[in-house]
Length: 448
Image (cartoon, rainbow, N blue to C red; front, side, top):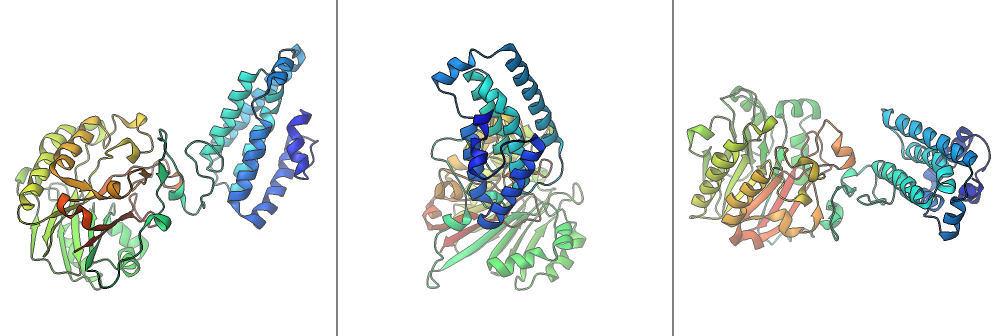
């Protein structure tokens, strides 16, 4: 095992002693490095060291490995057993680790696998390397497929996370991928959309976060979904929004405190409509339409197919076709912009784990085909995908598995526009740094 610790010596860390003593020494070294150089560089340095110590053995090493004695094999088996226990402890640890703590855990695993890397045949060595690489990737500090080591851990949305990435795909970073602002002379409108997952709770917990969002983003129109309000709640909330005197709300009457959409605007619209005009679809408060001088704006919350896909048939045979036809009818007089939570990750690039969600609501083949048939094939353009064809950017991260921290999400929120104004889109973007919901806001800047 002497060769396994050469990299430790080069860093000034003792190469002898118990595993716990070695880990403690490494942690002390990393803590000092993290203070001096920041998380990213040390994590990368550590990974390179690990990769070297677990590298694929050459032919000479392979020949030596074949001569391993039975006693050595027993030692290797013991080390592997220790490794498994270590990995189990790491998995069961529910405390929040600092970057240094995560690296130390990786080092513990590396120490446990050192015997295997020296004493077992080349094929086993490769497996050992892959195990460490997998654990490293889950900690967002290693060099492995789907992980960007250069990210700031305060910005988890910049972690490239996808289980089935294709060549050329990159992660969405609004700091680097948004175009320069339009000049003041260019007439335009700035639209935002957000599934707030319960507006009363958001306002109570986040101290009027919507007003803070308005101050920061200076939007002209904000569209909200899943407000979960009742009609009696609306007036009090209207009074809390400074500078946006025009707001239009629709609430579910079929089930109180459920669904609900709204449009809040500093621009007074020419007309307002609620629902699709079809009674079977209009009891859950899922659609508001406002007419401006240059376009119609629709704020929609498409029904989720639900647990067991119990509403899938309704969704793809009734709701989607009705909404698509409604949009085409409006388009006869002026262009249409549809925004909101459309409850569909259209392509594999739009979801972290496509293979594992083929029968999950929002990613079934039926829903994806319906999205294409009723919206895209009818001439409505997915503005984010048009602007960012090979970019992985999510708008929804489930609370259950802490998806936001690891950027394991879905892109369910959209701005779709009539084809004839698609070239007028200056920017279609995501605001992943805004929390308060399991969705992030999305934005559209449209030249008029």
